[in-house]
Image (cartoon, rainbow, N blue to C red; front, side):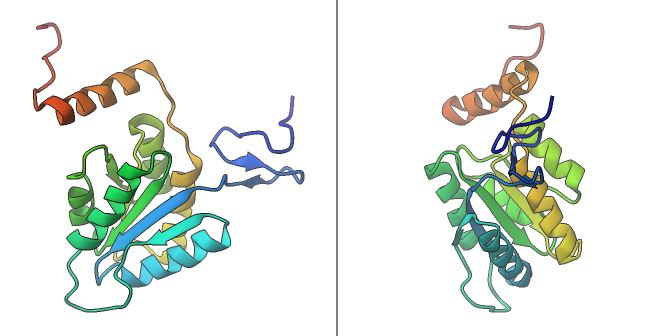
Length: 183
């Protein structure tokens, strides 16, 4: 049986009357450094044209000496403060940006370099921040990775939810999870 107009599809996108998938509107916070500035601008334009609510946490203009922590940590903090929103942090490789974003409580930032890694970040890890390396792929691929990240819901599978809860418990208490079979 086919999907009804407006019904949520397998990847979390909506199906319009034409049957083509379209993304549900998402609030997205973005931050970058100098190396990610140009890609951030491309993504802000693409996200806005796709109907998403976009907040650019900076930088507002290109400066070759910009460091990523002030911008990406603000984007991640905004995601943590607004449940249901998502974030995108961008640098040269995306590694440092992912590390910085993950310092914010409640953030599960994932570095993605393909549509599949973006899909699995959401599906298995309920990632709420996507980290991209601007020097790692062309803008068209980054847009495709972003589209998959935004459209993919968390699976909710028990094993994945259990793992996320272990991480959340650690964030709250500072106590490491018990080793399997030694509880």
